Amino acid sequence: MAKVAVAEDTVAIAFNAWERIWTRRSEVSVPLAGIVRVACVDAPLRVARGGHRGLVVSGLTKIGVWGVLRGPRQLVSVRRGPGLHLTLNRGVTGDDFDEIVVSHPNAARLTERIRQAAGART
Image (cartoon, rainbow, N blue to C red; front, side, top):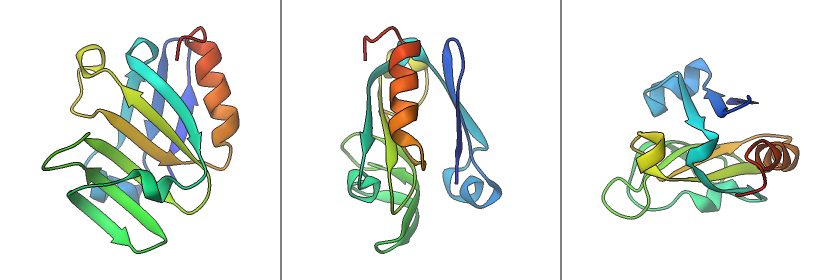
């Protein structure tokens, strides 16, 4: 499972060895200023949609990049259980993704920490 750390001005997501294969990156760092919206989702598997490049085990896990052909481009590492859904401003983040969706057992608490760190503007 990806590790999420909230710092003073960034949210850092580090992927484990298995996730790195499918996301093609070991980590991603998002400036708080680039986060448009943050939400805790109960079913993160449903959030990933569209054409994809990655791993799908139906009903269990999705890891990789979704929205490859059209729609919002999503960096995804999710399993059953709660998840964190970040909507991003590409112009600020300078990355290729409109959204990041990751599973985390404390997604609700992380959502609040990110909102507080961002000054409640998300």
